[in-house]
Image 1 (cartoon, rainbow, N blue to C red):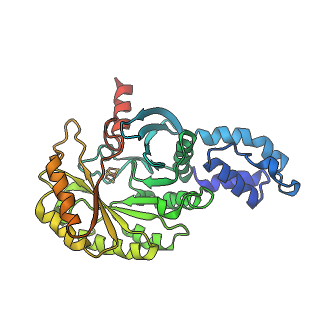
Image 2: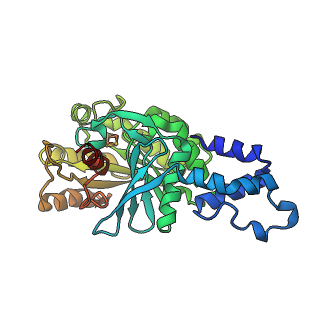
Image 3: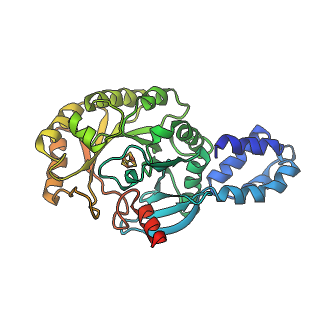
Length: 338
Ligand code: SF4
């Protein structure tokens, strides 16, 4: 389901470009689709056929992403299990401080060794309207001023739909462009296309290590780009869009939390327009990985800060509720099968 189809549908009912913008803006604000219509001068009134079709359209669009279950976390976040029109499910997360994390695919083909979503492989792409509908659902529950594309899926593998959704969120959706954060494991299509996109999102790059061989083990199906080159590409984009690159590094005890790896990334990021988010691994049953000790987490961050690099620890939001991305969906499928 593409945003373009929603536009065409409205036009087929007689909507002029201004009407289309107004209705889409009302949808993205989680207001009734005819919100504000009564205040419009007569010449801007919606055609009758369109007015009469709006309740059915509102119902149809609400089904693009509907709430299956909500799981509040102790940190002010809430994990949402979101049902799609074909019965598939994805996860969104309401983040503290007016953010939402949304999904771009059902499953994911990258298969990161530490990620539950990657275990199922890719089941299907989300359409651009389904991606936007997760923001609408979140806004029906609380205000949202920031959208991060870090839920299920690799946005680079569904880039047309993701960029369409970003363009709408950054225009009719009223989200500041720097508050749209596209997360990727690093893909040349992202670096080629983002600098030319009408709405340039901020970029989060999942690096996880500076060691090329280890990165191939941890992210077996990520594009073959050396970590050092990823940092160079990230720096170019940061300078082009005007926001720092946010590097992501899931910390795995004894795997990628050693001094050599951490000092090398500090060498690479010194003086760069970048910040580092370290995400301590959230242990799950059956995983061979462990979370570093609290003392080690503090030391890892301190090693970068001593080099004047902005670095912080970020637990995955709502990690007390079925942990990281994909675990809520996996649990619901297991419950359904039981
Ligand atoms: Fe895909 Fe992201 Fe999970 Fe890796 S961490 S498998 S890119 S969803």
